[in-house]
Image (tube, rainbow, N blue to C red; front, side, top):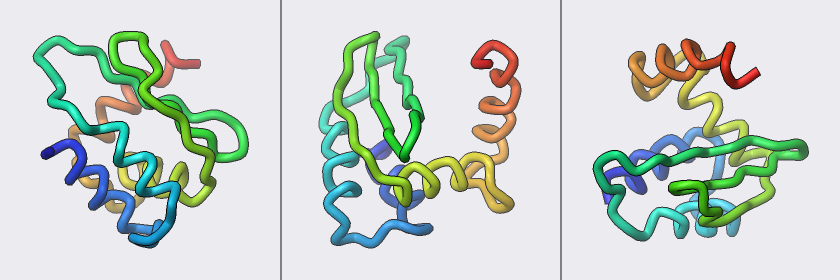
Length: 96
């Protein structure tokens, strides 16, 4: 619940509550994330966002607004957490 709530809050910065893409994306977070579980949120062209857990695709949604809101929440001028921004930025070399 806390992950879904955090993501819901992040999406509040650009994606309306009644946007179907927001509802669909949040539905991917319906189970507890276990310790040592690998969670990956991948961003593709045209606003495609894919959520993987332990290498399994949990879902995909295509929404430029949702994609932009998530990226802004982690990398924008006012990130939801400086630690998250630092973690994402530190992994850029291996992601590229």
